[in-house]
Length: 383
Image (cartoon, rainbow, N blue to C red; front, side, top):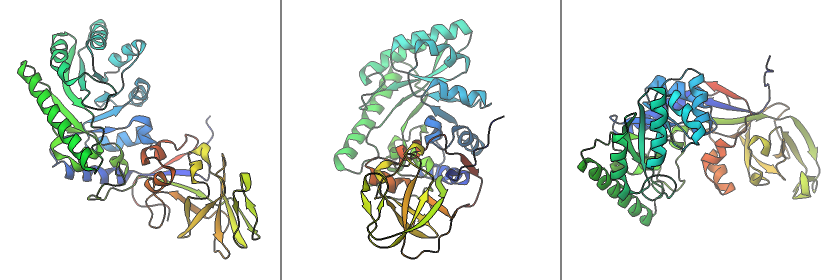
């Protein structure tokens, strides 16, 4: 029997905000595009199974994962929706791609041939999407090689070319050069699709728009969009103009586990890097970098206690960190604390990302599995 995780530190996942954000995406795309949501990396730390179920109930068309293992977890949980595999797999994983009915990206004829061989062995027709590399430099066939690969794919008896796609590497950037670069990539993609059609081949579902392109490049919406971070409540680049009110889905919360009054000059945490500027109340919070609360927030981050923003004092430890409540406080033991989330006055994952020199994707993805997830259907539980 598995023990219940009753930790004070928890990730509260607001499933109603998933629905709100999907409605925002639908509005941005005109309501007539297919939607493929990224649930890779355990739905960016939010819980792939629960997010998938909620989004499928709403009406998304596809789910997307990065690894075969991520897909198997969803299939074993009873999710039989169309599931796109973004990453290329090892040869030994190919039988599971076929047996579980995943829709893999393909970017070269050799990989496609191995998929076709296994699909023939299992007696099934496997949908695939041809991935074109239009500037990411990661995976995919070159634009000039796409028509030939499309020909190879339609000649394979056990593969079906269901879609053609690419990834736009700077669609979230507001810089003029990046806007121009993205526009050029979209034009290149259109010419590539036309070259495939010139071979008499139907490219199927055309998709390119990630979160950035969903928001700022409607010409890239094509037949389907692939929301990632905007589904979870954040703009992919903090410099973007906020035209839509996405709602953060995750609140990382905890409770005060210890309180003490310290004198002016008292050192707090490892290395004595922070000294109390006055007599003050210090509180301990049972969360640390092992939970995904970034060590770069040492003496820089802030948390919300009883509506007050409190500074992280000294270095964030593996399992705990301390905060300055001030010379006078109404806080008491076990009071709730917002580490990040959507509450007014608190830090968001975007705010933390800015302090840590990273992106909100990393902040939510890094919340460790030892932090239990509490799923809420509607309304806020904290603050």
